Length: 478
Ligand SMILES: *Cc1c(COP(=O)(O)O)cnc(C)c1O
Image (cartoon, rainbow, N blue to C red; front, top):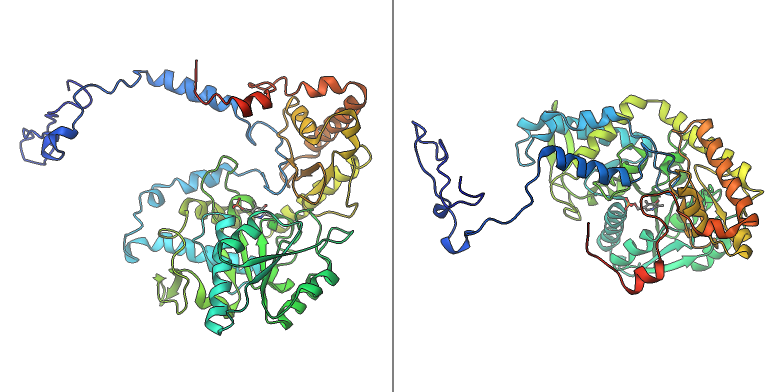
């Protein structure tokens, strides 16, 4: 070939003529004026050079394989590598989504079985695997709720109640669906204030969106009373299942009275995330909402697995085909591998969080001093008088090879530091983290200037945030 885009490929065999002598010109397929006349000038590098480049980039990144990643609300647990192997099996990766049911029995069986497992785990009656993320699941759930009331002729139900501790995606999803958001306050125990809630409930309320445990990592003890109040009002309850890692096998949203649930398979059910990669946010519903799910749902009919597109009041599709199939394979493998140990995973996640909380609560403020579930929220308020904010504490942690916790969320805690250790870390790792946090608290008292210089050991050191905001340099230079 003259160049990569030479006009005449002259490749043997293209066109499929026997004898292999046929000549095929790009001009046969594309108009001449669209063909590149000059080489494009791509860098010419060897495979080894390319590999070194990407390895160097990946070395600059932090990941769970490099160290403790206590990013609250994100459940950065260990993702067993065998799941990756299974998701990359050729039978799965080479399957075309338009292939017939007949040709796709294995994949359909997997999706059907996963639906069944998730029904069991959540207590819901039907599941869609389509949504591609938690927020996408929320939107799907809210669309279902909206259509449910439309079909019932209760179009006046325009309000959705959201606690002030909620994840930002909750009000955003409801709003995108056309609902008006009404905020309910938390009480001094960090839980929904039931008396305040009663004031907000009226005939125009469609639903309440809650997560339990909530974003403070605290279990909503009044959840049954709340679901009773809502149901008596003809309203529905949406469960944000992002915190499911705290409750697997111990309770479920159906028992708490919820009607619609999303799960984050990429949090609780072991798909690597954090870099914006593909996720899955399956949505489960109770019986009366079954006919509103997106289509298709995978069903078993006479020993065969089929895609059922015939769903009476379906909200339609929320994503192309069947969702992020590879994530579904990982979740299914993880659930099968764990079995009843899912319960143990939640117990360990809760134990680990309480352990760190108890060890740190003297050195840092703990605004809600309650037993926590899988995560808890400290405040950097106590350190503030030394000129070090929560952001400074987070950056100092990076010098000891820890990913910073989630900071400044939930919004109801000043200088929030949200720590979620997950079940997969050993006591030694937790102790190392505790020791570092205590050391930082001490350093802030004794030598705050040093803390303010952090991060000092990462590939990119402390950045000048003012300069970066005023004069952003967005080009890559060697
Ligand atoms: C992560 C999270 C979400 C959103 O999920 P995505 O998969 O990131 O869209 C919603 N609610 C809570 C509490 C979360 O932690």
